[in-house]
Length: 421
Image (cartoon, rainbow, N blue to C red; front, side, top):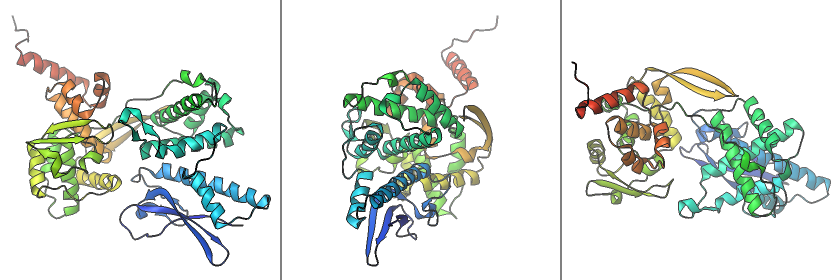
């Protein structure tokens, strides 16, 4: 019987490569099927045919989940075809994989077929809240990951879900199952959001009238992500990385983010045309909304240093890996407590600060430092894109003591401090 194998064709490349599915049919015929999945070869385990267990590959679990799901579905397809006496040809397998990856549509009739179709249609489904843009790859991965956990839940419980099973009893048991896997509260919350969106769409398509999903409560907790102070940014800025151009370029790119507040995806797409009259103007990729940011002297100096260009672009994963090295070398080694709820239990771990820095730290540092300087929150939100002040205040990293100091400084600046009598 035919079998499939997952591989990368060029393991020597230093950028993301397509993951292929290959299968042989006799001596001379072979299928080489290009999947929509990509990964850097350094993270690929040829023997296990999976992404390596590396914390620096952020999409590891999502890609492996898709591979496991496709592998299981294909094995079932091949077994059933052989059992029914259907010839397993190259074309038949290719057509099946097209359905798996959404290149061909099958008609959804139940919970599982609709979930699979919903994931496939992410490539073409538009989001009206983002000007008609298609759903992001990250969102599609989240749905695929949710479906993977649904299937694992069914195996564990020995059941097969249908639309009518999606009720309060199910969601409570599903949450307990995810907690048993030691998943974080926010990760579990993302799965609940995906299930609610799926059921809402199923209702709109008249596949079910079960609306109990509307009563599912979302789960989330405020993250302990860090922000760097202006003093810490200065420490990074003045460190001499001349002997290591790789780290120097990453340091410079990080500082650009710290003084613009741009997301990594927007920062790495900046062009000369975005800069005019001392301002940066662009349409943000995530929100599809325009933003205008005045150019800070730090940005101007780095921009000129690279002759009106940015440092060479690398992947976000590599950037985060090198950035940690930058911050470690620069001496950002203060000990930091980070708490997260996993498996329904709060866990607190001690880190050195450099271990927690990522590309998004730049944006958070930008917002936090501006707020601490007394700049109006409502104006900062115009750049960060936060819709409510409550969400913004959760985003920035200002301690209660720093809030008290801000109030004290405000009173002093306005002559409102009581005089001693």
